[in-house]
Length: 164
Image (cartoon, rainbow, N blue to C red; front, side, top):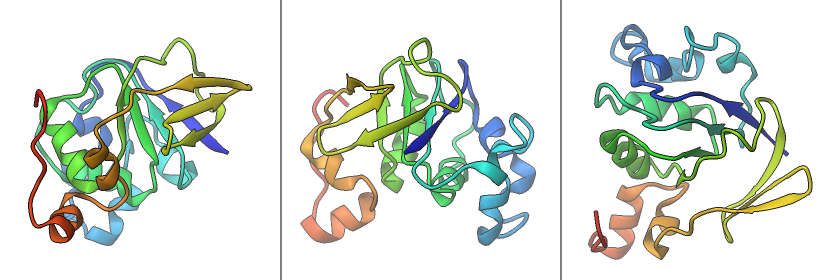
Protein backbone atom coordinates (compact mmCIF):
# COMPACT_ATOMS: atom_id res chain seq x y z
CA UNK A 1 0.00 0.00 0.00
CA UNK A 2 1.22 3.45 -0.90
CA UNK A 3 0.72 6.66 1.00
CA UNK A 4 -0.88 9.79 -0.46
CA UNK A 5 0.94 13.09 0.02
CA UNK A 6 -1.59 15.84 -0.57
CA UNK A 7 -0.55 19.27 -1.84
CA UNK A 8 -2.42 22.35 -3.01
CA UNK A 9 -2.26 24.43 -6.18
CA UNK A 10 0.89 25.97 -7.68
CA UNK A 11 3.49 23.77 -6.02
CA UNK A 12 6.65 25.17 -7.57
CA UNK A 13 10.04 23.61 -8.12
CA UNK A 14 11.54 25.66 -5.27
CA UNK A 15 9.09 23.97 -2.91
CA UNK A 16 9.91 20.57 -4.37
CA UNK A 17 13.67 21.12 -4.10
CA UNK A 18 15.05 24.56 -3.17
CA UNK A 19 17.94 25.69 -5.37
CA UNK A 20 20.48 25.66 -2.55
CA UNK A 21 20.06 21.86 -2.41
CA UNK A 22 20.75 21.34 -6.10
CA UNK A 23 23.13 18.45 -6.78
CA UNK A 24 25.84 20.86 -7.94
CA UNK A 25 25.58 22.60 -4.53
CA UNK A 26 25.43 19.35 -2.50
CA UNK A 27 25.71 16.04 -4.36
CA UNK A 28 23.62 13.71 -6.49
CA UNK A 29 23.47 11.26 -3.59
CA UNK A 30 22.00 13.97 -1.34
CA UNK A 31 18.93 14.49 -3.56
CA UNK A 32 17.00 12.07 -1.32
CA UNK A 33 17.49 14.32 1.71
CA UNK A 34 15.87 17.51 0.46
CA UNK A 35 12.53 17.09 -1.38
CA UNK A 36 10.02 19.47 0.22
CA UNK A 37 12.58 20.24 2.95
CA UNK A 38 10.93 23.61 3.68
CA UNK A 39 7.34 23.06 2.54
CA UNK A 40 6.94 19.70 4.34
CA UNK A 41 10.08 19.00 6.38
CA UNK A 42 8.90 15.49 7.33
CA UNK A 43 8.56 14.41 3.69
CA UNK A 44 12.14 13.36 2.93
CA UNK A 45 12.40 11.36 6.14
CA UNK A 46 9.06 9.56 5.89
CA UNK A 47 8.28 9.15 2.18
CA UNK A 48 8.57 5.56 1.02
CA UNK A 49 9.09 4.11 -2.46
CA UNK A 50 5.68 3.74 -4.07
CA UNK A 51 4.11 6.76 -2.36
CA UNK A 52 2.17 9.18 -4.56
CA UNK A 53 1.76 12.93 -4.74
CA UNK A 54 -1.75 14.27 -5.23
CA UNK A 55 -1.85 17.98 -5.89
CA UNK A 56 -3.89 20.85 -7.21
CA UNK A 57 -3.43 22.65 -10.50
CA UNK A 58 -0.15 23.86 -11.99
CA UNK A 59 2.10 21.36 -10.21
CA UNK A 60 5.81 21.95 -10.86
CA UNK A 61 5.54 25.59 -11.86
CA UNK A 62 8.51 27.91 -11.52
CA UNK A 63 11.96 27.15 -12.82
CA UNK A 64 12.89 24.49 -15.33
CA UNK A 65 15.20 22.67 -12.95
CA UNK A 66 15.25 19.00 -13.77
CA UNK A 67 16.64 18.16 -10.35
CA UNK A 68 13.25 18.83 -8.74
CA UNK A 69 11.59 15.82 -10.42
CA UNK A 70 14.89 13.91 -10.11
CA UNK A 71 14.67 14.29 -6.34
CA UNK A 72 11.11 12.88 -6.41
CA UNK A 73 12.28 9.93 -8.50
CA UNK A 74 15.23 9.41 -6.14
CA UNK A 75 12.91 8.97 -3.14
CA UNK A 76 10.71 6.57 -5.10
CA UNK A 77 7.57 8.62 -5.81
CA UNK A 78 5.45 6.22 -7.88
CA UNK A 79 3.22 8.80 -9.57
CA UNK A 80 2.00 12.38 -9.40
CA UNK A 81 -1.69 13.15 -9.87
CA UNK A 82 -2.79 16.74 -10.51
CA UNK A 83 -5.32 18.45 -12.76
CA UNK A 84 -2.50 20.28 -14.56
CA UNK A 85 1.27 20.47 -14.64
CA UNK A 86 3.70 23.17 -15.65
CA UNK A 87 4.79 22.17 -19.13
CA UNK A 88 8.54 22.01 -18.42
CA UNK A 89 7.97 19.96 -15.24
CA UNK A 90 5.70 17.60 -17.18
CA UNK A 91 8.41 17.08 -19.80
CA UNK A 92 11.20 16.67 -17.24
CA UNK A 93 9.16 14.11 -15.28
CA UNK A 94 8.30 12.24 -18.49
CA UNK A 95 11.97 12.24 -19.46
CA UNK A 96 12.73 10.59 -16.11
CA UNK A 97 9.90 8.05 -16.40
CA UNK A 98 7.73 9.40 -13.58
CA UNK A 99 4.05 8.59 -14.23
CA UNK A 100 1.89 11.72 -14.29
CA UNK A 101 -1.88 11.74 -14.42
CA UNK A 102 -3.90 14.84 -15.21
CA UNK A 103 -6.79 14.36 -12.80
CA UNK A 104 -8.04 16.29 -9.77
CA UNK A 105 -8.35 14.02 -6.76
CA UNK A 106 -7.63 16.65 -4.10
CA UNK A 107 -11.19 16.46 -2.77
CA UNK A 108 -11.39 12.67 -3.08
CA UNK A 109 -8.18 11.56 -1.37
CA UNK A 110 -6.74 12.49 2.04
CA UNK A 111 -3.22 13.27 3.11
CA UNK A 112 -1.70 10.07 4.48
CA UNK A 113 -4.42 7.85 3.02
CA UNK A 114 -3.33 4.37 1.94
CA UNK A 115 -4.00 3.53 -1.69
CA UNK A 116 -3.01 1.01 -4.33
CA UNK A 117 -1.86 2.10 -7.77
CA UNK A 118 -2.10 -0.20 -10.77
CA UNK A 119 -0.20 1.37 -13.67
CA UNK A 120 -1.17 -1.40 -16.08
CA UNK A 121 -4.86 -0.46 -16.16
CA UNK A 122 -4.31 2.42 -14.79
CA UNK A 123 -6.39 2.61 -11.63
CA UNK A 124 -6.15 3.72 -8.05
CA UNK A 125 -7.89 1.83 -5.26
CA UNK A 126 -8.76 3.94 -2.24
CA UNK A 127 -10.93 2.70 0.63
CA UNK A 128 -12.22 -0.14 -1.56
CA UNK A 129 -13.27 2.23 -4.36
CA UNK A 130 -11.64 1.93 -7.78
CA UNK A 131 -10.78 5.23 -9.45
CA UNK A 132 -10.07 5.06 -13.16
CA UNK A 133 -7.13 7.22 -14.15
CA UNK A 134 -6.64 8.80 -17.58
CA UNK A 135 -5.00 6.32 -19.94
CA UNK A 136 -1.95 7.82 -21.64
CA UNK A 137 -0.64 6.70 -25.03
CA UNK A 138 1.11 3.32 -25.08
CA UNK A 139 4.56 4.85 -25.63
CA UNK A 140 4.17 6.98 -22.48
CA UNK A 141 3.41 3.84 -20.47
CA UNK A 142 6.58 2.30 -21.93
CA UNK A 143 8.60 5.28 -20.70
CA UNK A 144 7.31 4.97 -17.11
CA UNK A 145 9.90 3.76 -14.69
CA UNK A 146 12.80 3.85 -17.11
CA UNK A 147 12.75 7.25 -18.83
CA UNK A 148 12.88 8.60 -22.32
CA UNK A 149 16.56 7.83 -22.95
CA UNK A 150 16.02 4.09 -22.42
CA UNK A 151 12.96 4.26 -24.70
CA UNK A 152 15.01 5.97 -27.38
CA UNK A 153 17.84 3.44 -27.10
CA UNK A 154 15.38 0.59 -27.52
CA UNK A 155 13.30 2.05 -30.36
CA UNK A 156 15.86 4.26 -32.11
CA UNK A 157 13.40 7.15 -32.30
CA UNK A 158 10.95 9.10 -30.24
CA UNK A 159 7.25 8.58 -30.93
CA UNK A 160 5.12 11.20 -32.59
CA UNK A 161 2.87 12.70 -29.95
CA UNK A 162 -0.70 13.62 -30.63
CA UNK A 163 -1.63 17.10 -29.48
CA UNK A 164 1.65 17.88 -27.68
